[in-house]
Length: 342
Ligand code: P6P
Image 1 (cartoon, protein in one colour):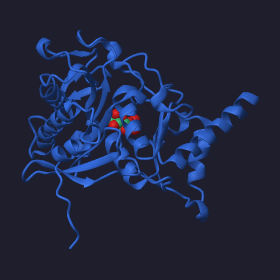
Image 2 (cartoon, rainbow, N blue to C red):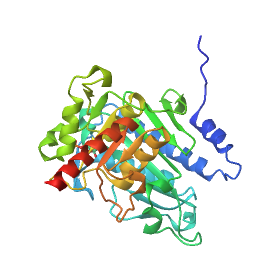
Image 3 (cartoon, helix red, strand yellow):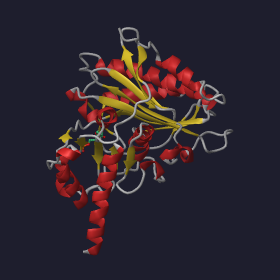
Image 4 (spheres, rainbow, N blue to C red):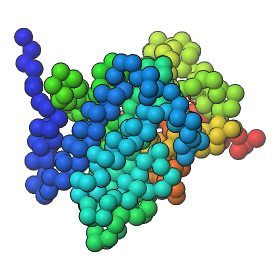
């Protein structure tokens, strides 16, 4: 009978904290508060008969996308769970145009939280897996004043922790605070996240590619050649690859983390910066994949080294197994040279 390591998220976080004698426990409490919000959001997402909450509010978010009520619920749940802990100086949400100030008596915490409350929400009504993504930084402004936009606009390489919760056939929380990537599965019978995988390492090379091929016509010529190359038969390089695309970043990335392969949301002739947001989606996911031994770039530059200009800026992203990401970068660089020679 295999020895089952009964480890709750709360206990694991505390044990991870002990690896750092200088730790004050604030980050642990922050992660714990996030997991509480995740449990409540999971309840709503998975509650049967959400007729009153599924469907459109008719409002439009800052991305110009129809807001579904569950988006609003998740955004408010995260704010309410996080605003009074005293660990944050400022927050920012993919659902809000500007930074979110912390109520005055709690606002001098040393951390900054950015989150996408419910990514993939266009899939809610079809019961496709959706998720919450979060990113934690240390403040950079003086600690005797409220946090500012400057605290939020930091390069991804400065992240202290990042994670996501995927609400699917089960609710799974994945996070890293720099010491490995770990996953926890929610046991709804007693409402605890239990350790399911410790120190996850993504395969160096995969056999799955994930991209919305409906945009093929508008892609960079090097990307077109790369996708066609993946579809050729070559036993030694395990081609053709399998294509998998859920259309919900958290679900696609979670599969990619565990099975390997490459997820791509590229720029194209209609969207020169791609679709996904640097601060709320690409930075946290890139931090996680790199800590799991993977790679993430915009096709040329490491995602985590992009200097952000605005809260909601978008970036192309190629993320996953190191060898696969390097290969698409080579295909695109080669075409750039051909293109510049022409
Ligand atoms: P497309 C969901 O709307 C999302 O923001 C990500 O979760 C997902 O990866 C992407 O957009 C899907 O975009 O254009 O393929 O529908």
